[in-house]
Amino acid sequence: MIGTNPIKWIGDRGKLTLAITVIPLALILFGLMTERRSQAAPTADCSNGNFSGIYEVEDVTLSGDLYVTSHVNIRKGITMTLEAGANVIMCGAYQISINGGANLRAVGTEAFLITFSADDPSVNWNRILFSDEANRSILRHVIISDGGGSDPNASAGTVQIGGNLAANSMPSPTLDQVTISDSGAYGLYIQVNSDDVTPPSITNVTINDSASGAVLANAQALGGLGSGNVYINNNPNTIQVIDGGASRLYQSQIWRSQSVPYEVLGSLLVAAASSGDPYPTLTIEEGVTFLMHPGARFDIGTSAGRGGSIVANETADAPVTFTLLDDVSGYWDSLYLNLLYPDTRADLHHVTLNFGGSGGTAAIQQVGSGSLTMDHVSIQNSPSTGYPRVAA
Image (cartoon, rainbow, N blue to C red):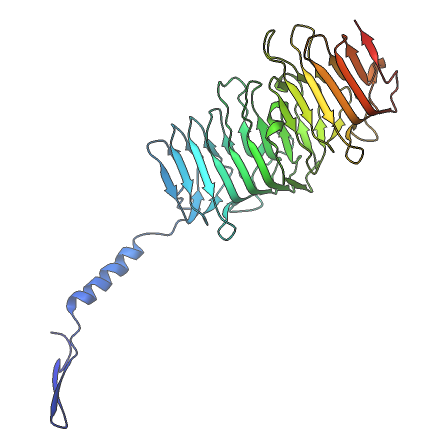
């Protein structure tokens, strides 16, 4: 019994009232134990991280403030879920890698966004890497800032998808309602192999203030660039298209108009993967502009039994334009049409080709007698014959 006068009898107009003022000893002890237990559980921060290392045993769900103090590797088919409102704080130049069939599902809401940011904004962290296995990862209502590393000349991005062109299956995450800002390199870097038929889905994504371009991608990744994407104040503010062997389009795709030009770094190929395979068709939506580097060209089909087609059915108000990179760059090469095989075609309507035809070539070159339709096609400022040079 604790306290004085634990029981009092109080008279009030002939009635007796019992007032109990006993404080149970157990209640006091419980409070002391609770206080000690709270003190024993330290709050996470960059000196005591709570989101690091390898995750591979079972599915994991995380929420709240998550401090990354080493590289994170999510693998072996598990699914990691970040709940709405989660804040991932990168405490150094670390990356979050998703591979081996694993998935990252970070789905916020307009009211409760999910964020990835640097503990020190002056030190860029590395990247979110969706690696060389197919997955069903999704980022929605997510803000990602201060990633991409510290080298603006690197082929790297705050969000990187793919990169291992020898892989049999490629990552195909969905990014929707995502903002990527202040990258130390590219905002978004995508490189998938030529056989990939399900490029990553990129819609309603805003990329701003990247030290390099907004997007670096190879040709087969471009079909995943959907509607609603916005690019602001990147350096340069373009979608850069990787050239050469990394940009061989073996599957039919639609390239959609974005709010910035596509910057073509070199040569692109649209053709069947091998003789006897279906011929792919590249369809270009109205309003697309290609900034062509010196010597860059589009090859449609090859002379080795590998056909391809191109379709650009545009309007006078929104033509497709091929032009040189800038006022001081050299001429680009050509739109080279190998129309040697049945069912290959080139349909060009309201297309402008400006400053093409480097090295004495024509801005449009046709080989073979396949189907070529040109309507309201304008060839300007070509140093050579413009159009067309036709070979048997």
